[in-house]
Length: 132
Image (cartoon, rainbow, N blue to C red):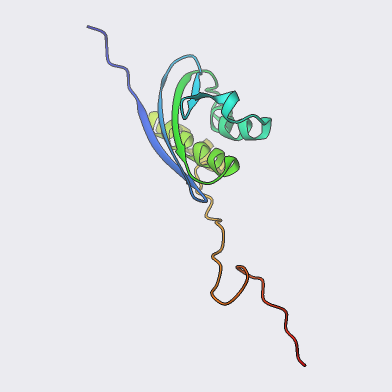
């Protein structure tokens, strides 16, 4: 019987995106919503944001990552995945926490869209004021 390999799981959030990550040792294959990593995030900046925790800890191409992400747009989703990957790496090796924390990968970005207020056209915008 084969030895069971350890799977590290974590959750990350950004804006309205929620990413769940399953990570185990492997060849560096990343699958997001059953699609290839390069296909899902077509631009280099979004790809770099997801890979940032691996680059910070020099663990690039050492883990296979499966991601299910819902909500928001692609930039919000990449931020959520980055946080989830960083959390999974600290689960795998608590010694990495310091490096990831100083790089800012373990901080949940609290910025979100401000709600629209009643009686106004937008969150901050007001209807034009006419004195006369």
